[in-house]
Length: 107
Image (cartoon, rainbow, N blue to C red; front, side):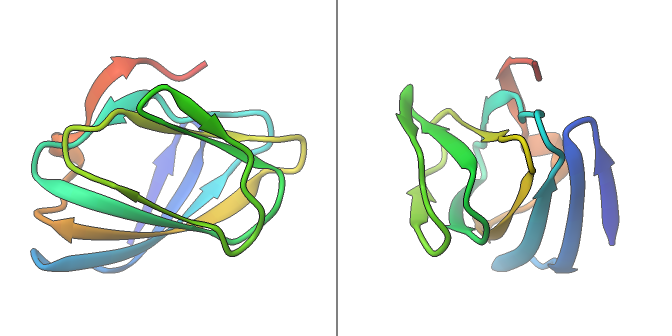
């Protein structure tokens, strides 16, 4: 399934209530909202250089291959640089777009 977002595209490859695997394709210069989930943990594997990641108000400048585990309830966001980039997202728990609780909207 493909989900269009203001910041880019999500290509969802597996959706079930144990583990969901998706690739987030970030459009250059865009970011997700600061948000958290109640029903799932996220694992992000950075696929491309040039992205910024914010987890619990700490900012990181990862390189391809870096991994982040984000527990339910922890605020997070992704910023795309000048070229955009991709993130492999593995969700553990109940995955639904209704479980995105926005703290701050997209820039």
